Image 1 (cartoon, helix red, strand yellow):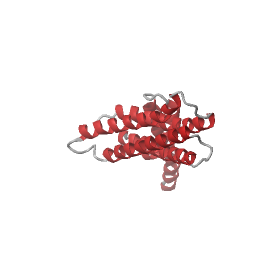
Image 2: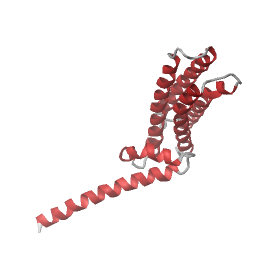
Image 3: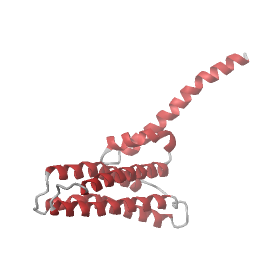
Image 4: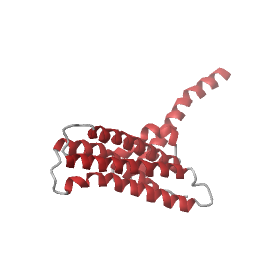
Length: 186
């Protein structure tokens, strides 16, 4: 009888784990419904479901971390553009300005991540307000990167596409993080 009970319990364990895993991914899917880029939100966060579980703060912090990694990757991509010898002086200035904007965005996301650790303190409303401001500013900085394309000066399609493609995902991930943070109850 004892062995039978152990076998039954062992066969139920994976079901329980699978059920918990399903619950965690369902939580992420439901949370992502409040974002503009729902599929990107789900695809980027679901690999971290077992870490996030059902914790809204972990969800927001993970979304910010993912946006930060994407911004760092975009920074590298844009910085590599600056090394191209074929850039016109105007393109070089657009790239230089974009690098500054992306670095500002990275700093603002980092500040947001640090403030997430202080949401349990007595000034949690203040910290949450700061987080929202920094993430909004990061989003603005990312979008500002392409402003140089609109000034009537000629920027090659290759430069435009490289910058836009690297920043599009960053801006969408940052937008999703902000949407999740805006739903955060502290």
